[in-house]
Image 1 (cartoon, helix red, strand yellow):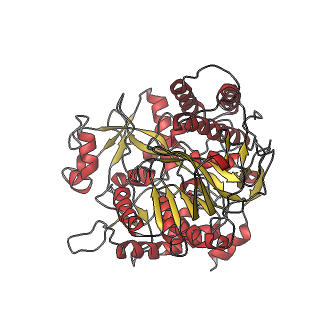
Image 2: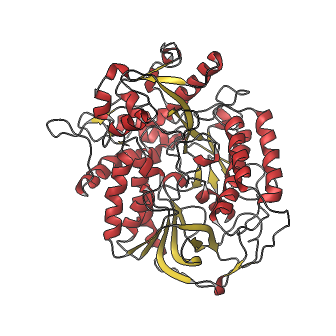
Image 3: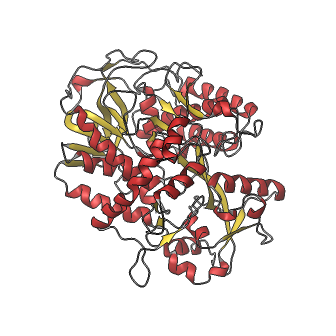
Length: 563
């Protein structure tokens, strides 16, 4: 990997003593479910700044259509939820982590109910539970069929805004984590220095330094590194990139989940069509109206997402079509009743769900890898914690089970917000931090073109199907792009996002090249079988040519299954 990627560095030159200073006990970077839940928990014991890159209602959480998975129904069990999660993860889930999450899930649902969150109910007022891909039980709680994220955002943001000890900074971009080193490039290799907060850029006030005793990274995923994605524009992998630059260990970055069904209309954005629709009986068909999933998996349309996505790609390769179709015609008016927002979105494109087939295609959806943490959210850097899609602790393994993501944010946001109080006695600055990086002169860059080329390259070569020849070419392409993009100094979020996308894309590609097997969402057409020597997590930090390999602890799996 190009040495430019493997530097612990800041993105801009600065002298900390010359910038405005803000102080807090806990800094939470990210305004989605994980960040809000972490802020709420941390505010029980200290002052919190919650930083949102855009407005507080623009996040993957607010866009989420899928529900929250929990064994909340009396006919379900946490053991069954655990089994489905482990199965979807294809041998890479950490059993202790999975067990902790599914056992906490019912309590997190009850908490949301106490806080006034609205879930779908039947005519008798009982909560209704849907079924989604990979689940053998109906255990998904939804709001308005496919608007769960918006309702969860409303519920949590209301509580956040009511807490006097939480300050919400909207439209505030986190450039880099502050670490104790004072040299401009922060040295080489892994740091042992403590994270002291972040340097940020506020749309109104400009650059500022936020000093914090503890920093929680909950900045979401990196779906925008791909041309085809369900993610909102803010998901440019900033959290993963800034943690990596600071020297944190990251893990499982080769695993990017692709959602099988996004609305595929030429020239339009890729609108997600929730898995809940298939849970209610929708079919996947080819242009002739013929169902095809029975050829690929016994669970058919409700197979795990990696299976359904690859099946669609296989059908498209055979038919030379640009999309397959979702058939909801047999649901009649029930579709608009259960999924009013989806019905409205589809009709916007002059498609009538009661009479027309709906064109769909897979898109990048969820970043499984992230900052490597323990079960409480601690990263490899003192003072830095991570939760939600920015983090990786082995919950999802090689493929996230549907609707475990909002649950993950609730469980680990709470855990991280609670454990940061171990830093209550730490100093929070200020110390003198100097970044004296210099810009190489390469002329003006067309950032729109760089981003477009990067995202198209990732989609074509590091997408649902991968092989060594293409991955090697992409590694070389990233090295080339880095020589004239990463060495530049930008003064706005567009440039910093582009640099973050380059770092994240390079990490994903390098890790995908290293993992010579097919497992879960990672499909290598030159290594189509799973291999026992890869049953573990690939961990990376700056300065490594090969990852640290962490095998799955099978003794814990035995202990969990016998519990």
